[in-house]
Length: 262
Image (cartoon, rainbow, N blue to C red; front, side, top):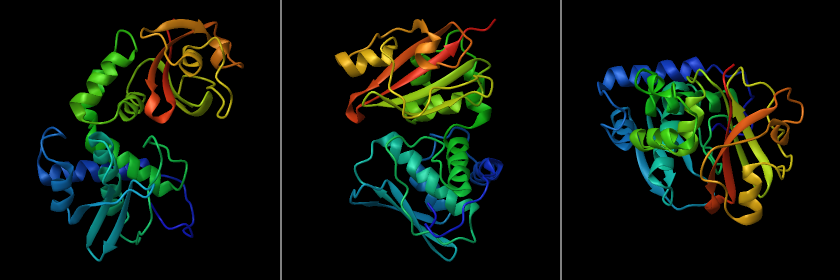
């Protein structure tokens, strides 16, 4: 993450994608799990070390053409891989900028809603850990549920959140991911053609499956059809399919919303 006094700018995610492709080409691996991301970072000139958890997930200190990536020592394996890949993205893309910042956040999603450089580092991490040439073909699903996404997350050793958000780049369906925390919408992200999305900060409607999780501590384990207006009051659609992934550790639920084609 960049220093606070740095001016924000428009993101160029293609910079991150091209940098990740360059790393893959230079190092010469086929599948992103063939090589531990710590070793990959070391080969690129960045040493990874564990640091005590202080609320930050990772930071990067640049020392000329070398770098030190510090990562919170209590991160789960998948989140640790993403955090390292994100900081390596800064190291690879933003050579002219010295970083001594902290990348934080509960979900490690792709759009930190900060500077253009943060989005570019996320684009790098997404392509590095879930390369388009091996990930995209798996995103044409007969039915959009958490089951195939969890299989993708396991195969590529990323979090379910990361796998779901990466799927949005390649699925032919109209899909959105909605994160809710303590009964309120925390963030949403969807495919370009999804249309209006749930409003950030709004309360989760009682007719959604996510509401059951927050009120009863559990939700349906299968995808169900719900009234589209329960999630999106401004929509013209009548129904949307919802599938919930509970995340009680974070007091969160991730909802997949999917409109059937036609």
